[in-house]
Picture 1 (cartoon, rainbow, N blue to C red):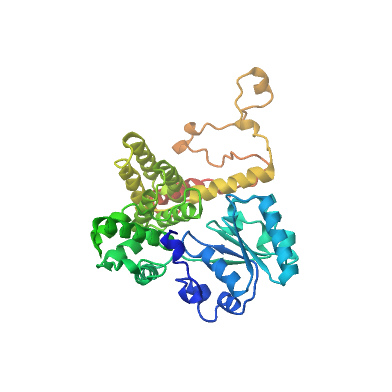
Picture 2 (cartoon, one colour; picture 1 turned 135 degrees about the vertical axis):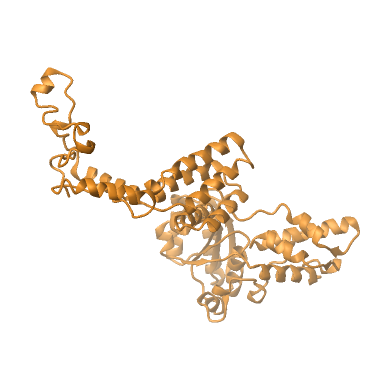
Length: 429
């Protein structure tokens, strides 16, 4: 028997769950489907949000032949076969063909290029499905010929409604079993499915199998918890979810919100992210967003990293979490980050300027005769170990102030000290 998730595929838009921002009354996609108007599109969203089903419904509404390929299995040969089938159908019946390519992001540039002439001349209407950002994974030529629609994870209410429909449907679902869900069984399954309709129905089918084996019809919270215990939150290592969550963690730390930072850290750990990767990023946060406003931040970030290396999971994760919360609470400064960027820009612009002779060491007589080290003022011989008015940049480079301390944390004191010294060197910019 076909899996429950496949049997319960919507037969029309009236049965489609979620995506009201695309399929609600008056929305462009809903209007075009109702009118049977075909156009090439990219469906972008997490698994189990209805990408394949939506493509089928579009083909059905347009009386188009539906050809489904998976980028994992298909190649150029399969595309050519689909093109021949589309041409033959158009000549024979005048009907269009919708070619659906699942996981389009797995096709390389050359493979994606194959579609272009057939989309251009109308032989195929192309519908690609992807869980990855099309901006990075789909070639621009194909993107320019297709509209991108973003599908969202299903809400818990959407999923519980879908589960209830499956329990009542005697033809395609589990209605013949006459199962009786007890609160909060369906809610537990819906939450564990994490926005994925396919996962929710798979867990419900598994629960039905357990009840059948036990001779029971009561879908209890305990049974639901048993089938939901293996559920994992959305987190695709190396994919969009991965980078979106590390971005959220970084921004929460930068925004001095320890609670949000801790939440995103736990989301990533729960999804299976390597704590070493997070520890490396936390060290980056310490130097980029805190810097000398609190030099202890970098030390603590490295200590958290070392703690994980020594203790491993799960004890070592607390060391990383401690560093994350400390960084979120620490005073913020990107002065060092900005200063280095500006200095690197000058290096690139001005090229290999020579070191002034007075700043060069002179270990040999020849070098001394050439003027190396001449007129250099040894700072420790000057008042307050500061050679007022001395210049250490290349002669051809204008005066610069790359490092501008912020008035927060330790940098406030650093800034005051620098201003006192600079006041004694008025010629310096």
